Amino acid sequence: MTWLIMGTILLGIIAGKIGILAYWLPYLDNISSLALAILLFGVGIELGRNKEIWQRLWQTGWKIVLVPAAVIAGTLIGSAIIGLLLEMPMNESTAVGAGFGWYSLSAGLIAKIYNVELGTIAFLANVFRELIAVMTIPFLARYFGGYLPIGPGGATTMDTTLPIINRMCGQEVALVAFISGAILSILVPVLVPLLIGMR
Amino acid sequence: MYFIIIPLFLGVAIGTTVKLEKIGIHLTNVLTIFGLIFLLFSMGLGIGGNEEIFRNLKQIGFKAFILALGSVIGSCLFLYIIDIRFFKSNNREV
Image (cartoon, each protein chain N blue to C red):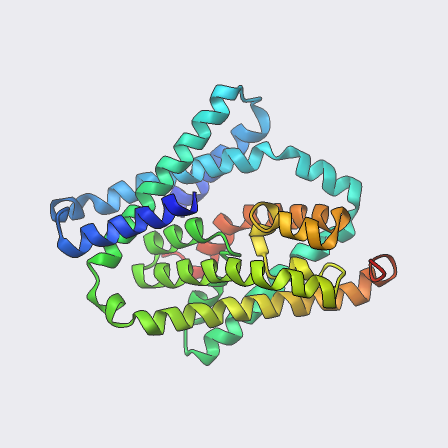
């Protein structure tokens, strides 16, 4: 999947550079709108199907919601502060953060509804987030423990970084990581457009 | 906003209420991948046609990296606080 995503973007960049699809460009907006609608429809179905998340959430207790809430607050405040240092508008920095590591969806969304440059930043920032997560989770698990190692992964703690958390922190933390990642995933397609302030 | 919210909620409504057969699940996967590929391809086209992005690639990469770092550090700080405040008793000894 990662290679498919990377390959598609790269192919697009090459096609855009040499301009072979120049006659496409007038339709690009419509085509990508349709693609976005189809994508979000599919994402919606997949998120809706995960009913077990809500059952598990109920069984584990409401306190667990504090974990994704902390990740959301930390991510948005952290990106907003970095955004201020970079002299980026707050809506841009927080929208990039609200990708929570789901780089394909957040980058595509931002490139489509805002601009390509911020889409590129969102793509790279969220790829970096996943990479940082993969590299730091073992360290954080060893030196801090608790739920803290769930922090770096964001939405990826329900899939790509879940095996690492499971291995380093055990099943109990992994279950919380899964629930947290699922809640964050649901919020990505809602929070990103909301924060960027659609016109 | 509507072209984001409507398909998303329509999808969630179908996902929660309709019990999908294997073929339906497969179709959803295909739809999602198809939509994603088109969207990312058109993002690529936009990047390729935008000289400025290439000129500023270093700067864009740097911005992206420290934004990611900020998100990670912020998340860990907040989790550290709720770990101590709410979960300390049952979790620290792990």
